Image (tube, rainbow, N blue to C red; front, side):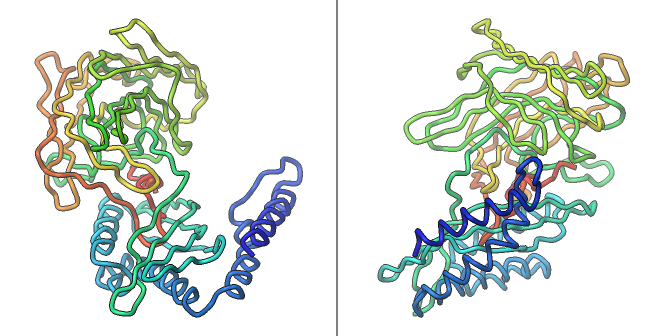
Length: 418
């Protein structure tokens, strides 16, 4: 039956290619769901026994409850379908989404992939889900991904204990727009620390820093400069990242131009290397990106086409995100930015001259995860220091993912909305 369902999905994909874009064979995920969901769900329902159907029902209810809990700002609605630990994750995720500017989440479609497996008091089921996230400025983001649910029996009822996303890479960072501050207050963000300037037109940005280290498997951090993202949903950025993985740490240089995902570039970097990054507009949506490892003398350069609002400039240390949500911020210590500048109104200015504002990174409880110092006497240097407050990361729960969400750029497109 699993093989038959797979063949049906492949057939529907081919139909969707032709229906949506007969000239270019483009694929629309909305067409995929419209055509494939009824077929795959019919096969799933007719191949399930009572126990499997019960598992499917809990997953569907869990999705509905997360949507309702967010709409009513009442996390208790999610308790009956989640274990205590998973419920805590869902609460944190919804809180992060709301703080990042999300006003609504909605499940547009769900497809069952394969059969539900039940072994004793544990079950697993796989879905493909499409969610729409609405932001406070009325813009929306639609995302689709695979969800592998694990459920356990508690007091005779199935409850979701985990929702994993196979094949989702841990990319360079997805930003969340700093929370709009009250007058006189310092801007705060769930994953940004550093400086931002949003009082003019910006056609260039740059800075230097020393790549901080990460311990194997303990979390990640990223440093970057960018244009856009504070008052608009566009953002062109480039920087470095350190991600702790089992048995080691991955250090990468990367570039990202929203809404496209980030990609690593061909430049080897290490902890302790001094790097300089610059992004410069040459007009007509043309941009030049340069990343240089001052320690090794190696570099990367690229010219790209990108339509930017040119509405802000940023110099940021970030807790990266994947489509699964915020990743844990590692204990990177202190990172020092220097020679930071922006091309504002055609003139090269330091952060101070550009009227930059510092940003404190906080967790969902409002506790500081990373503090930003005042600018140095040159107006172009500052440091970001990690506090001792634990960072656990997070993602939208049952069937969710943007944003995210991906993820102003609070476009949780990247901080995992479903």
